Each structure stands twice: as structure tokens, then as C-alpha cells.
Length: 126
Image (cartoon, rainbow, N blue to C red; front, side):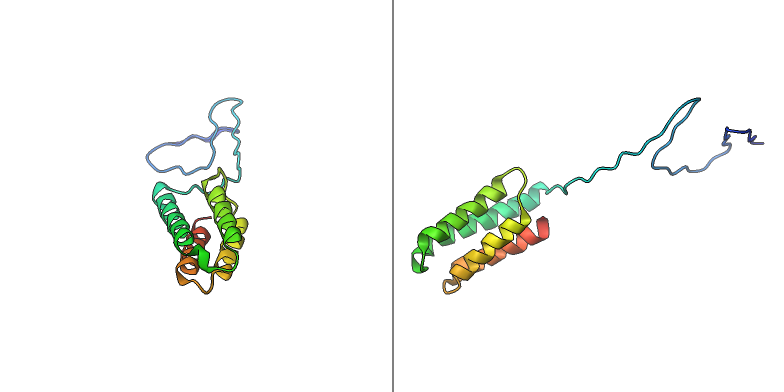
């Protein structure tokens, strides 16, 4: 038969104990440390992201001369690449750069489509 004394808990028999923290023994203390952690992006998702980035780079290389300001388009594409390849991509910057690329190249379906496809992946991942 389990006994309950002041300050002590005795568990007997079988069962399940679910706890986020637990301390056992005289003077034991339990503490839960909660920190905000950025979601990690798995290898498969990063591979898809890199694939879409490469498609955008190819489209800009092959069709970039058809837009009004090719150097600006290449600069924006490089900024996207720098963000994606950096340690902590900024979703807002990425989406802004990609929206600007799609707008700049709206008359060139290959570039606009690649920018929108990459923007969709960025939105899903970050």
C-alpha cells in the first residue's frame, strides 16, 4: 500500500508519468528553460530551394537582356542568392526581392515564373 508523507510522494505499481520537468531527491530542483528556436530547414527542402534558385539564375542569364534594366535584375537575383546561401535568410527581404524580380520581368515569362516559384518555396520554408 502506498504511503504519503508530508513532502514525499510514493508511487507504487505500474503506470505512466508524463512531465515536462521532474526533480527527485532531497533538495532537488527542476527548471524548464524555454527559448525560441528558429525552425530548421531540412536537407530536402534546402535542395528544392537551391533548385528553384538555380532555375531563376538560368532564366535571368538566358532571358535577362529582354527586361528594361538587366543590371538591376542581375543585382536583385544576386541579393536573393546571398540571402538564401547565408546563415539566416530573411523571409521578408527574400519575398520583396523576388516580387521585384517578378514585377521587373513580368513580360518575360521564364524569369517571372522562376521568381514566383522560388517565392512560393521561400514562403513555405521560412
